[in-house]
Image 1 (cartoon, rainbow, N blue to C red):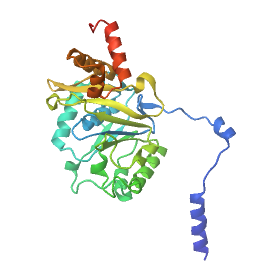
Image 2: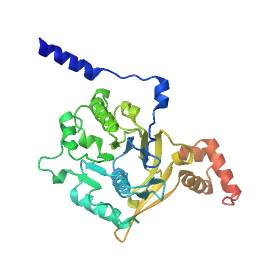
Image 3: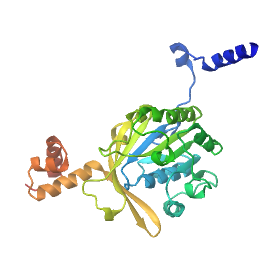
Image 4: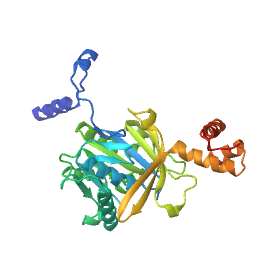
Length: 316
């Protein structure tokens, strides 16, 4: 009887919730969250990047891993890391040789002296004897624990390959992963989850995933994309907690390869829209026809044409 009582008391202690008055809350000396990758990823942040297949998700996630691990910037300074942080990158499907090739080109392109020997850890299927565990289960999550010492950012690429339990469109299947992410956050570990987009452009599966996230980023193919170009996509912020204005403005990014190096080029999405509007205008389309062709509102079309005329880029 005494043993049962002790177990009940212990369980009660473990489930007791703590409450705090607003006075005591405001008096706490809490360190502001450091930005691991400004503006998208704060310390303890939870972030998702999603895109259709073949757009360039892993190019971006590997670049994020390297940028955070060494300190520096990517996308021509749009995303910056002031100092190095330890990163664990868990890859679910990339062949080891491709991983090696891409990282070599990223490192060759870097202006930094390089990451410290232990600052970027990589777990990838080709190095495992029995493949990768299912990270949507407690057992699978436990296998990652031994590699999380001093890690500030965990990158999971991607959700479908690494989390195989349950159905993506059922909110209940997300709960075990959500609980794990919240535990990691309490320990000071940020998480970047890479995921696939659905046919409508949103992240695939239940929208419940987005509830706890600080930032949700989608990569989209431009309307005039040609597969021969390689990785070229638009970066849109579907959720941007803590940043706005110019920092949250969408932009286009393209990846070029030159002499064994990766080079990112970026430009504002407004600039891309203006270029397309002008091309269609020069082809003789009306503003209404341009709106139907581009999906932009008539007001936006009118504004873009007015801006072009003021800058001398349009003759009427």
